[in-house]
Image (cartoon, rainbow, N blue to C red; front, side):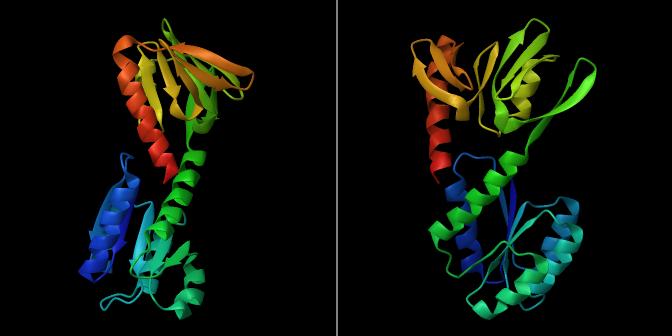
Length: 236
């Protein structure tokens, strides 16, 4: 996820960036900071951001004007205004602002914003697979685990199973930032669907109850560490 903070005051710019970095933890988040809206626009044109935290009162280009220019470029970005003046709220509706945060930013309020956006992004993530000559889209959040079967991969989801000709290592790379872990050379699991760990196996939650997936000896400790990190990231 790409996040930008734009504020002409360095202390608030640094505070917002550091706080976002701290809350994001081990998640794949890039935070850039800008003191000028024009520089942010130039950067956005090269590579768009997912969330923008914009100070409203800036000398060269105020936050409302900047937000309008950014909204012309994308309808999908989340815009959060940083301000101490409630009277600007009505103008924010014109650019479909997600929220206003007062300065200095309160950690719990920032946490709410980040959690909301991350939940939205994860729920929208889909994989395109080709099964029996047809292209299908499956929701990443529906995937329980994947199992390598010779030159094929069986994908177990909450909605059913899909056997496709694919390499499980490619899925490992695609899903690296979505909470998936390669617990065994032949298995890729969703950390969100883990029910418990037992000796040599991880028990996955399925629509019919549970399924046991092997964990290679070398991956027992890394799996526990990945689970701890995942639980911590979900807690924020």
